Length: 332
Image (cartoon, rainbow, N blue to C red):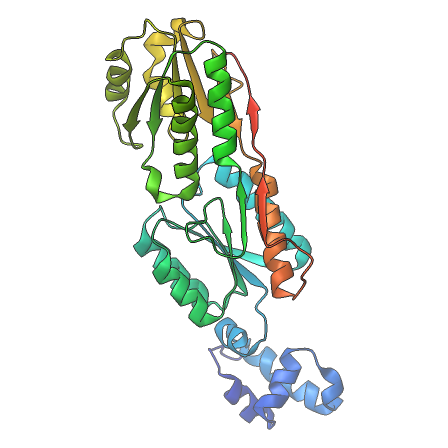
């Protein structure tokens, strides 16, 4: 059996006694460009050495790679899972594959992923940008790669799909005040990292300001001890009916667990309202009221917008804002 080794396209051409262009025609299935004898000679060399063309080289010479990049903050959350599923299903229907990167909301990681996606010649990028996107934007613009922002759009880029975070939060908090809650404790991730966080943060504060209701705000992270969260709640005078608002899906489980000693106070003296988490919020005791984003539809809309833009279709709206749904459960 002949030995197999990595060959170049030029070596295949030399052994088959044809040009590199003819080998390229063979690899792309263009049989009408050559005689049966030439085709058979190239096929014999390819089979003899088990030749496989370089993916990178083919991407560099192709007009389109039919690859789309997807870069989001954290792919481990249920929201992100549904978002990516919507993107993937639409891309599959449109004949595209996706490359997924996670920035962990850090600019350095974001830039590394974008560099690699540019090297892979992605046709476009669906991107959940962090708070300082200019370096990334410059790279993408220089590479001529179209971008659709999803969930967050700090610089108001022309192509985006987002949800009505501010309006939905304002509406939900206002409804809770109408139900008799007299103060709010908000546990939030750092707001300025994403515009979606800022919108929820301000939606809560503005609704309370309009009703002249006090708010106790705590900026926390996934590593904040549950004891500290419970202590922050207990430090407040809970005699007024109190609502705990957690506008980040990945923080809600931590807060819900932390206040377990106070669950008997829910919902008559203590309420809790979160964002998303519809994968488990209906299974807890008590169940948890949440504002839910249409994540699957958001991902599908972003992929449709990007593919249409790549193909030069002008009938797709460049900006889409989808409505969130408020699901009232046993915690309010």
